[in-house]
Image (cartoon, rainbow, N blue to C red; front, side, top):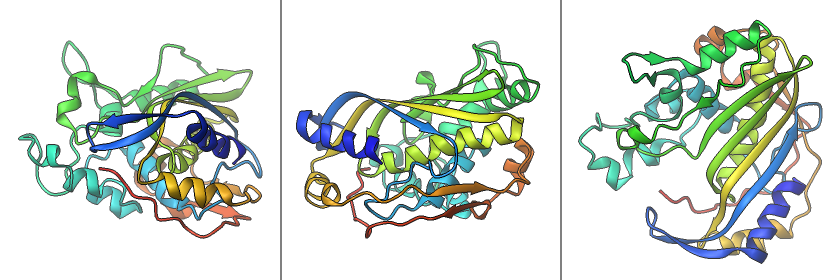
Length: 283
C-alpha cells in the first residue's frame, strides 16, 4: 500500500500534463516507477484505501493464461474488463478484422499462446516456460510477452503490461514484469494483484518457492477526471493491514489452469477496506 500511495502522491506532486490522443483526455504523468512484492503471508498487494475487486483482476489473468480473445469468455470467468474495449472502442468497431460483438482480436494471452514464427506456425510461449521451469531449467532467453508491434492492428488494444520474465535462482522463482502504460487509480489496483498472482501461481505449478516480483511501470498517469477523487478522497484515507491470499493447493499444472480453475480457487483472509470509489474509465 505504501508503494501505491507514494506513487499516487508523486504523480500529483511531480507530474506533467500530457494530452492522450486515444481518449481525448489529459493525463498527469510521471516516467518510471518500480514496485516490489514479496509472495508470502500478509503481503498481498491489494489496495485498502478503497474497495478492490480482486477476483476480477485474477479472472483477467486466468483469461490471459488461457489465451482468450473474446469479452464473453472473460465475463464467463468473472471479469467485465474487456467489454468496453471490445464493444465501445470506435477505432476497433470500424476495424475490418473485427469478427463481431465481444471480439477482442489478437490480444495479450492470445498472442503469447500463439506467437507467430517468421518461418510459419507459432510458439506457445507460456507452455515453453512452464515446461522448462518444471524441469528446473532457467532459460534467460524465454520471456512471456503479449507484445507484437506487427499485429497491433489485429486487436482492440495494445498490451499495457506486456512482458513477464521468470528467473529461477537457488530454487526460488522470481518475476520481472514490465508495463508500458498505467492508469494508476484504476489499472494499477488490478495490475499489482496480477503480477503477484502470476508469480504465486507459476511457482506453485512448477514446484518452486515464490520469491519477489519486480513490477516496472514506464508511463504512470492519472487522468484529469480522476485527479480530484484521488487527491481529495483516496489519499486522505489511512491504509489498512494487508490481507493474505490463499490459492487452492490442488492447482498443480497448466492444464488445471486451462480447464477447471475459477476465481473461487483464490480466497482472501483479513481483507479490510474503505468504501469503493467510482473512478471514471477511459476507453
